[in-house]
Amino acid sequence: MVRNAREHFLTRIGGQASDPERGAKVMFNFGSDIGIDLGTASVLVYVRGRGIVLREPSVVAINRDTGKVIAIGEEARRMLGRTPGNIVATRPLRDGVIADYDVTEKMLRHFMQKADGRRLFFRPRVMVCIPSGVTGVEERAVRQAAIQAGARQAHLIEEPLAAALGAGLDISEPSGTMVVDIGGGTTDVAVLSLGGIVCSRSLRVGGDKFDEAIVRYVRREFNLMIGERTGEELKVAIGTAYPQATPERSMQIRGRDLVSGLPRAVTVTSSQVYEAIKEQLEAVVGAVKEVLERTPPELSADIVNKGIVMTGGGALLAGMDALLSKETGLPVFVADDPMSCVALGTGRALGMIRVLPAPKTRKLFRRVV
Ligand SMILES: Nc1ncnc2c1ncn2[C@@H]1O[C@H](COP(=O)(O)OP(=O)(O)O)[C@@H](O)[C@H]1O
Ligand SMILES: [Mg+2]
Image (cartoon, rainbow, N blue to C red):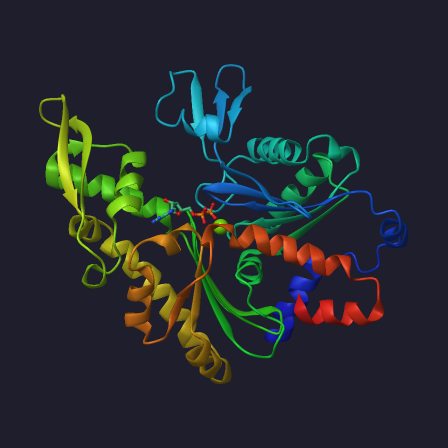
């Protein structure tokens, strides 16, 4: 099982082992290395030597009449829910699958060019982390899109591996590590050992589902219509996954009264946000428990010692670590800067590919990823 997962991964990102051009590339390594976290909520771009240079929402605004892209990233996000009839602002990866391939490609190309500017002249080597729900066909499409956008080589890396690398974990050892990444569209739970995924689960529940649940709750309890962005603001500002361990706060929000149709303000508390997202939190906990149940005993023992590491924006929800810890009885750690882990991990993986040529380091590379 471990071997298969590792080999699977090696063929996916290490498929360049017999690249005949490699010698030349190492000698004339003009091009930069770019790592891309193609997330469901945000895209981060890492450039070797410069760190994370771009961080923008994965949103694209399109004119429905002409099919033309009007805005990408932050500018497009401001249009979400505020567009006239002929313009749609969409999130092409929203639920962890590529809903619209053309739009995804345009977005990828836009961010690559924006991050690297003129340097794309020297075609970069690109490592893309894609949501785990993406299928084989879509994987090829992403790889192709990266090449078309100017990449000299395009590699894909699985999300849990990138997250673990970015969190600074040593995943090369024959020792179990558990990573839980809560993103916008999905939650990814995986146990890693020897640079491979031993068992994992991807759940279509992430921050977006929390936001939607808050919107529904406010409509039900206050007869007030609010948008998903307001739902997200409530979650980030006062939300809690474990009210016993976090301070009770409250926040005033505005929306449209369902009865009168007029704007109205209400005050929402942390415990109410908790009530709203309880079911979604249970789903996340359930996925973690399920993976723990499927983990081979030796690796379970390692996880008992090392604990669970959380990454992704959802890890920042107050009390999330306390909830997981209480439910599993294991220590839980939130990675430093959890929203950057995957992007940093793509950078580390690129570094490993770079050292490939020397036989000695190739061995290391094989072990690590
Ligand atoms: N402080 C916070 N508390 C709770 N949720 C947060 C916080 N900051 C960001 N998030 C949520 O994290 C999600 C985005 O996480 P991210 O890891 O960037 O997703 P993805 O990798 O899918 O693009 C969003 O749903 C956002 O609302
Ligand atoms: Mg992510």
